[in-house]
Image 1: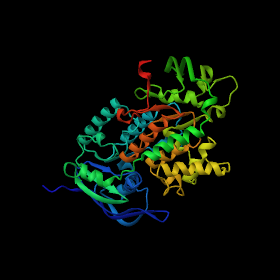
Image 2: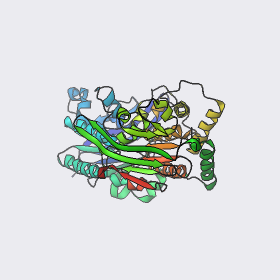
Image 3: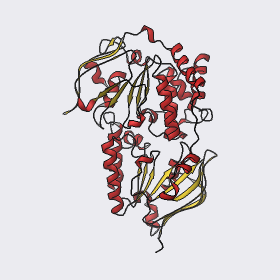
Image 4: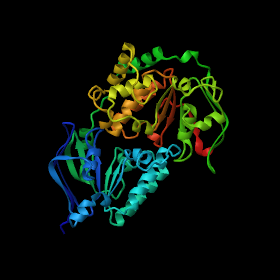
Length: 445
């Protein structure tokens, strides 16, 4: 029996500021089909999702929604489609005026998923929905997807983690450089040969690895710091009646690289922000960072000059007009935006990290135009330009494709062998760098 069409894209092209993002996309989704979209960072996957939502102008071709019965329904397209993406975290802060400072990355994601389902959509588009979720939450959400499909909702899932593809997914579309390279049933299309065609490896050679270690070791102001970098004594953090961290005593010494683990809501992001000074409850607890006892007159900037950091929400804070290279250079000044003129030395160091991460073709672009994964690579360069004694990484691989994930983990592992100590958060065991030599499990505290 021939299936009825659900959504059809005919020869669709999308331009942004004169550049072609999607080119001549032909894609037919039939009723009852559940699709997965896979491709490297920056090839147009999220643009494809936004095109379906009507948020991107089509320069050529057309998108036909066969489930819309009349012009009135066409005017209400956005009410028929549920959408979950990392970009919507900004909506949580701005449009809804929600205070998400006390929500973890995973908790914010759960909120967005619940919001998308609230309007009972016909089509649900999920752009990296599993990123930031712990293993239990990922399993639970996979079951939710299966239940939604059984209820009649159709799914389009965008993901970099092949292991997160739910069993109920039936079809896959492979995207590269803004073009469809293959599409069809998962069991025929999703194989190792096609995956290799999608992704180009860019491994670090031994000379570049040695160069990373030497560069950081020479630049670091590590020797002036005390042997105990961070000391927490009987720390407790509460939000109203909810206790997030209770009676935690912990210390980090020079030469240690720590993984901070635990389920969503265990307090991992809270723990890290006690150190950076962004959580004000750090000042009413017994915490010493780099020899500064919190609450004794030190400024947040005295602490931050020793820290490089990647937090999921950092990439939401930059204004649309700022260029990629300015984001990188802003790491010298611990600012969101570039308000100082960098020195020649600082520019040279910024260029070093651009070259190391193969970002040369991105540096003149606006940061807001990049994919989530590309933005995450930029934030690593921003965090490392000042060769900090402490590097805080909260889900640094979120949004990265398998090649960039592999590359960033190798670089983190190299960094961990230098004078830069690491605090690292992830929910994926396979993303744990080999340089990690200690673990703090907040669930067991």
